[in-house]
Every structure is written in C-alpha cells, then in structure tokens.
Image 1 (tube, rainbow, N blue to C red):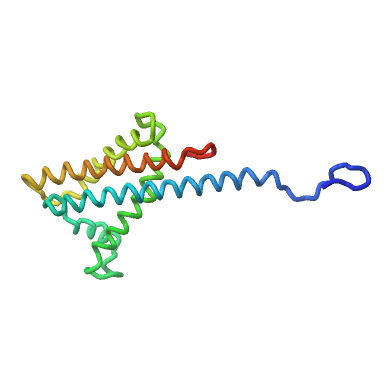
Image 2: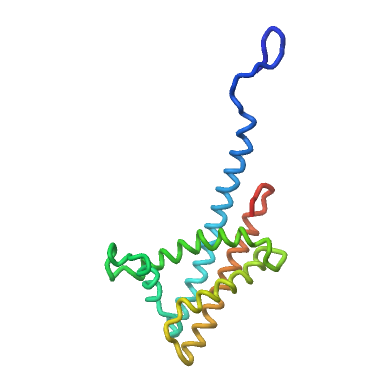
Length: 176
C-alpha cells in the first residue's frame, strides 16, 4: 500500500509475501500426497486382481487379510464375520499411504531412470516381507503359485505406483 501524499510504501503490518511460499509448499505436499494415494490405489487394485487369480488357483488364501485385522483387535469391534473385508481395507490403506510415502522418500535412490522402473525394484523389496508374512503353509504347486503370483503382484504394484508418479508428478513444484 502506498502513501497518497508521498508515494512511499506504508507497512500495513500484514506479511503477505512471507506466507505465500509456505502455502505453495503445503499445496505441493498435499498434491504429492494425492498423487501417492492415487498411485497406491491403482497399484493395490492391480495387486488385488493378481491375488484373486492366485486364490482361484489355490496359491493364496483371502483369509490372510483377516490376520491383519486380528493384529489390531478388529474382531472385538466388527466380529469374526467381517475380518477379511476389514483386513483388506487395512491392506488397501497401507497400499495407498504408507508404501507410497516410503517410495516417494526413497525413490530417488532406487535404480532406474523413471519412477515406473524404480517401482519394479521397490515392489520386489516389498514382496520379500509379504511372501514371508502371508505364507500359510503352502506346499507343492500351491507354493509355486503363491511365490510367483505374489512376486508378480508386488512388481506390478511397484510399476503401477511408479507409473502414476511419472504421469501425475511431472510438474515443476513436485516434491517427488
């Protein structure tokens, strides 16, 4: 604001330019969070399809999701009939929040030029924990289906997550 008599700037006491970078940074963080959630949703959807195929071939038990819900005591709230869907919602939530956040923070250090390629390695790393945590005593052909299907599911998850990062994260102010 300028003084009408002298044309000199008058300090109004409101700092407008100092808060603009903070709002821009906050908007970038929120936008990056949305990109991660979208990528995680797409990746988890792809993973779900592969796990459903594995389940139909006897290489994955959907009841494994119930174990996830039991870990937080969900049976006390939802009963035992809803443990599989509740466990899947927890699985979906992790696929949309935790894993994309970790990917965004460490993706720069993974091998590959594009995030889609980096996601292949990231999915493999996630698979190493999943294959042990969700193992349900499979043997023979069921074990082979379990190992291959969960590997494909996780590599697909990582690729889809990274591809969404590449596609939606191509703006200048992205934090990813």
